[in-house]
Image (cartoon, rainbow, N blue to C red; front, side, top):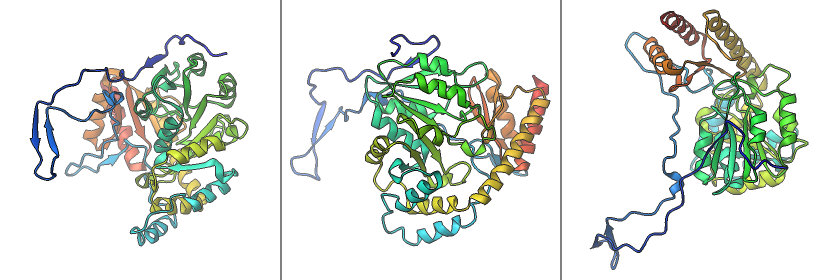
Length: 401
């Protein structure tokens, strides 16, 4: 039975109210248009737009590195893969570029087949889109609208409130626990009859923390079967803890679970914008209905297929980044920083009011990080030289506290 009262600590952020009914207004000025006979230009009025868009937060991408003479600049603000494309990927994309006067395969046939084979799922359970965030927006378009609610932890992926508000649904933000991890008990208690979708970001962006198998299964058992739970696993390839479940295995026996993955992080295709969902057919079919026609370019499709076929090289590169992650984590904790155990390709420092000061210090040293003002900074694990600059800067900043 669903709760009708909100759990303590959960914050419901409703979209703006619909347009009020207003009396017919006379235009301030009418002017004949010279281009169209009988057409009129109306001054003092503008098209009515959806009120849900009022006050919508703007997605803030990671800043590019600031270039200064004599300083090597590094970008550690967007969780990008620092390596070049995997073997065969650039060749596949280049070959596809020879035909970009043609529309791409709208059904992403070859990519769907490759993904189905890779994960051992029916092709009908695959849906692709412009990055995992594009697919996440399609999931919301398929499930939620005005009067509905969407639950997610906070802070988590900053696109969640944006794409939720676009649909007209209300965000229910459940604070992370003291360990910077999803408070699944509080999230379960926040479910009401209006809940339509729940995001579980695992590992969580920007804290890097994870939800483990037992806790996730217990949570899913409390979710009504008509509420869709989306396991957002954009950083799955960086997990080394065997107690963190593979969302694809969880989805197999749970029709109300969908899994999001991306080629932007471990696979290094951030600039091509391709992600996918694995979900049972009613959900996957809804995703295909809400997809932008021809949204995933042929370059992206062919590069993704080539990336899947270069898994040995992928694992080698991910292992190298995980090794660098361990080095950065160990050095920061040795300096006295409190760093949550991270399972992604970034680390999180909760700096509170010193957040922007730390980000500015990093930029002066030649690295850009991702500050969340008043909260903390997310720092991508990049190439060794960039990580060295970050470690030195953090040590110097720590001494000033």
